Image (cartoon, rainbow, N blue to C red; front, side, top):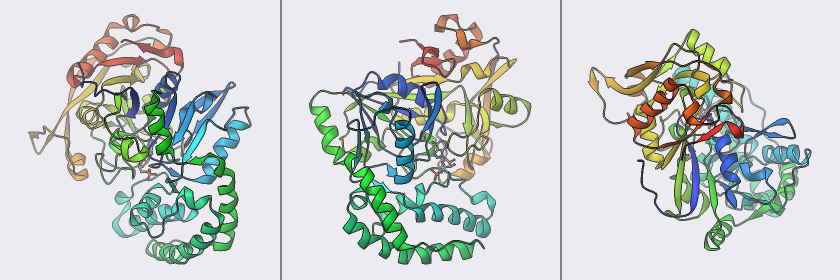
Length: 443
Ligand code: IMP
């Protein structure tokens, strides 16, 4: 069952919904089994919690292998890096005695998220809402991700890590960029009837030169590093940030993030050519959640949604926003399993569904009365579809102590079995809680 392995000893983990599938749990487990852990997309819009010395700690930019001193962690060229955010994470972990030195390498080609990107992110949302209506707001995390990737593609105003760690170059570039950015920000503020504070180039040069100096020891050509690790027979785990339905090319555009979150982003985002990743673990939650705006065909409101939100702690790791809630959507999951090339699936959050008298699975869409056989490319169509549901018996009890798949209530096993059957991809792991020992491995 499932897609054939493509060969290659490296692995990837991809979230297959709109994020918050619980990828972090699987990445933590698999990190132990690989030599190198690499991030290839996104920035500090992503987030997952790890536990260090009994304390919860949120990682946004650091790869999940950072808690293991013997693993090499790579932030690839496809990631957009907010130096302040990254250093806060490094300092936070070092304050808890996690050693971060030779075990972290940052691509010299990665792009830098500057303060103007965050301002542009905020002001563009306000301007779009003011001129096109609230519904057109993307509902971004406000971390400057979209504007930074836009500048990467636009080139003339971009700043890369290699510039950040070169004081002379930074002193030259920043004032020139600021001249244009102050005008752009003013235009956006005017369009949204908002205010903004003009950027001070000299202060920024000083601040970012200092940040660059602190990051410099970690910076290198990570493409060379990863290709060498590959040639030496070491194994690499690629950690996808955000999620497949947020992929800029294949997600629910325009309500997406600005990078290739699926496994398709690995090659461009790290410099390791295609074909080297043999195992792609897709992670999906047994129900669906979404933060931010955009279509959500299986969304539900009311008592069941409120119950699932509370039991599943569905509040954003990065922004704290309450997440929108819905049933599992197999039309979407079949699509993202295919675009990610998932060779196997991990199903999380099954315990959260426990206690419901029945559970629903979205298995198809109709639009204008006709059944769709492909996932709509258009947000308006996706907003207008009717979901076709199958209703299955619910299950009861605290599943958190279950230690093998066969010990789950038979209705829960049947629910997992039905998902597997519809998708045609093996569900090799089922998570009954967020701890390591709550991952039930089936393979
Ligand atoms: P941006 O990435 O900040 O531009 O946000 C674009 C959209 O992606 C918004 O709907 C965000 O809520 C969503 N988003 C971005 N990253 C994540 C993530 O890691 N988990 C969940 N939603 C995310």
